[in-house]
Length: 226
Image (tube, one colour):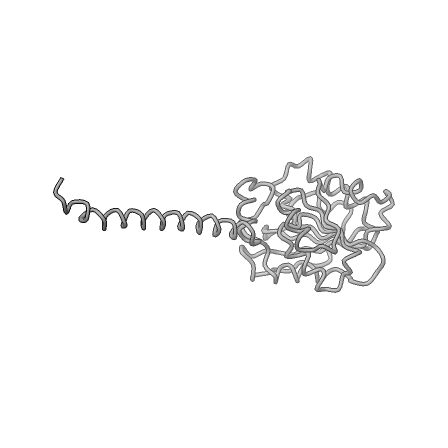
């Protein structure tokens, strides 16, 4: 090897070292970015949708406008519980708190462990229950008379769930809600109700389009019939 060959190779060696260091930094930065995406609500929501689209039922979290529209139909005064079904990342939960519903009256039900973990960190003063809304009375620990529940706010994707599960959830709502108390449900269906059984035992009270949502949605408020 010529005596200057080693000197000539030094820039190449340093370049490879620099590229290697850059690659390691890029990999580390990529992991940090990926972790940050998973941590924010939209990234968490997207990950859960990719893993279980039928259970999530939407490709993006509900907008604040939609959440406020749902919360506006809840009376913040009273002694009974306000129950939220399918809380996801907590957009509606926050809207209910902003509406004036005391944290101690709120019961938030979510089945996805990742969402539950996120909700418990975001709302340390709210009772977050992990489980199936079809067994709502068991989770709440209230009697079948339903006197302890003043309102149920649902973001459950009724059309994408198994019909037997939907039937069980609606039975729970009919059992737990007192006559005259509201069941609030949002849907992407633009005609009629998202599922036929939703009309059994309930009277429709209001129906509002929320265009500032992705995709646009409707908020349906029903009242438990006497």
